[in-house]
Length: 181
Image (cartoon, rainbow, N blue to C red; front, side, top):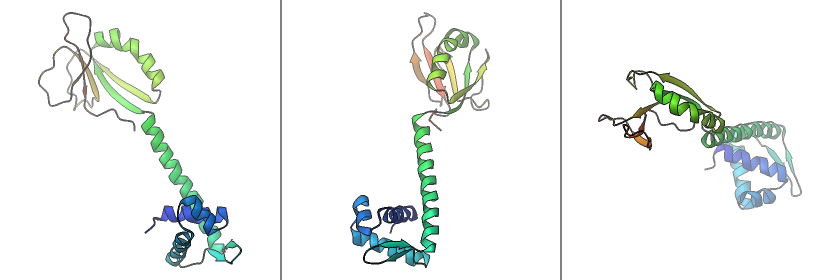
């Protein structure tokens, strides 16, 4: 059974093309399948949408209303899908980040402008402090650490080796994965 959006697309294509056969060719169905789909749609709605003759199709008053609403609905579906596709291709949202002051000044301040230029739809809320923070209680998405990490149930990934001999590396602890919103 066809979904209402599919029925709307087929109905719209029939009207745009002026025949079941032309619409069927565009959609990849047989003309009889298109005709049956429109007949089932009309039965479900309880009205005739198209007056058919051997030479032409003509919308009924109800068909005109249905076509207008179908176009609005299909545009809304396309818009929603495009918005979701854009969100997936372009990360956006706010990240709450904890870093120690020396790391923030020495390392983040140098890379942040390029990052923001590349991902302008991401904003940051930084918590820069020398104290250790409770990542969950402080609602931290990412915590940047230098050195060895204590055992933790949190996810940690080494992202860079630092040149200073006293440090073992930089780790990132995501609480929430930074996926596009």
